[in-house]
Length: 108
Image 1 (cartoon, rainbow, N blue to C red):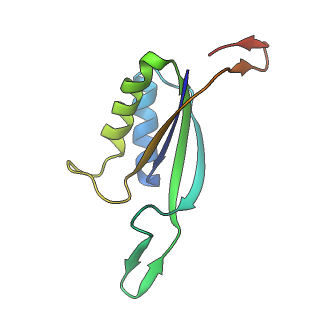
Image 2: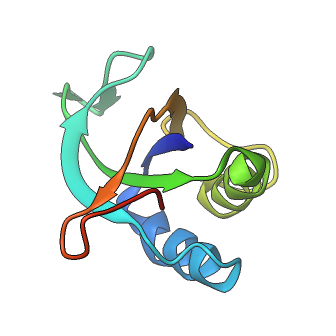
């Protein structure tokens, strides 16, 4: 199992969630965050924004589904054809175990 965390623009969340659902990945945790990437924020006119609003989508999938999930996220979170600074980042980490609390079952 793998945990995929995608940090994306808030305006892309609806599209990404819809496409993940259609692709067979309905189980997602979403939370609001603020932060900055390598570009260290953004300057608009004379105002410097150090903390940029983003959303984190977190899902746990079977190893063989990783590439499909990443492809869906990138396709729907990218700005335009070439993408843009601030489109986000995807992190993939291993999950050793998962348990469903209500049924006490192990696994996805």
